[in-house]
Length: 261
Image (tube, rainbow, N blue to C red; front, side, top):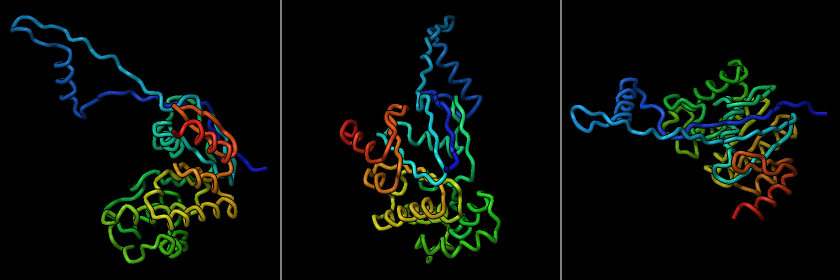
């Protein structure tokens, strides 16, 4: 029986809405003074009522268990909480409450530019990402040619990535994430930036690393056909909560028939 590699226990994430800081203590104090008091004349100060602090619940009491080698899909409309969940899993942000247990190295591809330094070349960024994942230089060198070939940016591999198009950026970023052997691969909708041929190439690679190499994949997409083709199980998020969890075909069909209108 496959071991559990991700255990999500009742996590929630709450954000404050509205302006919280100007980035400068002196400006913050000035704005507080202006917002707190309005001078009627030289001798009278009138207090101004503060707007109450508002909170937005991005995630509410999410519990999920993911097994080794599983390909888990996460779907839902814009604002459902998908990206927030992935950022928590990738340790970019912390949950407000709840607990997550993760066993294994994680490679995340959440948005164009994640994990790359714009002033470094493509080759240098490959080594940087490998070092972040805890790999030795020799291990990265052994994978280097395979990564460059998969990304199809050979001609520009020694060019700073700030000069890359968004498609080139994603090609190289996915190649790095998929080939540097993380135990858990997290992919957001960023693959939509690439062309259809490259998207299919990525789906094939994700199938390979999960089925043949036993690595876990978490895949967020608005492409329901891709989710059905790749994911064995899918979670539907709505308003920061799990609306439905089950086989990808069942969950996708429910979403298309009831919510994606």
